[in-house]
Length: 481
Image (cartoon, rainbow, N blue to C red):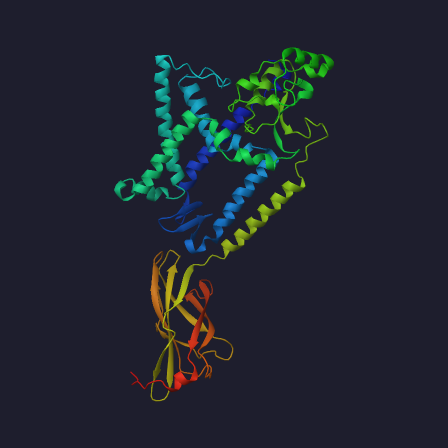
């Protein structure tokens, strides 16, 4: 092959294979990486925790999850606005699985298919040897599908727990059920449903047209050079009509009608029809046309470009347009907000509930004591035993008048276990002299870890109920213990 020809034979397929290998290895390895027991991403329903960027968040801190969902959706929208259905062709698990099964197992490993470049001709299953090869292919893919299903579960059950659960299947039927049915689906999807999933099942193909504009980059056929093969209604022109079109313009006669772009297409479309929802931007058609046209010393008739540049021929593609910049601003803003909220992670979780009884009153020889009882639910999210205590912040003018009756000293809380603690606050002072009604006094509970008062601290709003004046006067006398 001459140097001139070689310049036109850059393979998108090889780039995709390398990228698929990277994505596969990354997805398999990521769940195994942890720092101090925390994973890059783990949504654990067993432990009710979310691990994000090697920081563990309790389920009470799941305010970060909506940010992750927004990032995923807006990220896909931004990717589609810029590069069309590029996610489908380059990152979608369905596409990667089909390439592994069709190109590697069926074609390279077993020779069930003759050539990777011809995806339209299915193997002749009337031959016994092909039936045997098909069986081996399905069994091999089933084993890989089982690994893929397990890998999926590792983002919900970490590997260190997952393999322990395998030893006790009766106690983890839900886990095994999900893996079993996910594996069955992957076998049916990849072996039998194939690219029909992309065309008829996946909802992404239905919404992508809303996200496209004239500058969206996609695999596109240049009919100005190659000539029109289809009319405006996407009906194929007869050969005589094609020849008539080509005879009018010498530049419109480059397409050789070899249909290599058609035979190589995994979704079974003809890119020469123009924009089609089924196109996943895998660029295999561009590779095929590059090879054919390269032998003639010409550039490919199919390129990764925009309708604005190729079909309308109005100028260069505008990559950084208002829509794309808007997506980038939104994604950046959401990321910053998530980072700020994540950095304010509480290392101590505290819920405060008042008991049903509003208050209790104890009258001694020289004073009347009003008690309010609370139930504190405390959780230590650090990985070490810690002692917790708290103080009461009363409104202005009442400072120091509401004190802690119980507990009288700091208490231990072990990591990862919620501790219930009954707390009693009391006052012997006259907080409010109101003869009409009980008074609800707003207070703030400042809870902290002993020895880490400046770092591990939470503030919770609550109330202290003080009875009306006649209730105080009519309180029964009790001996002071």
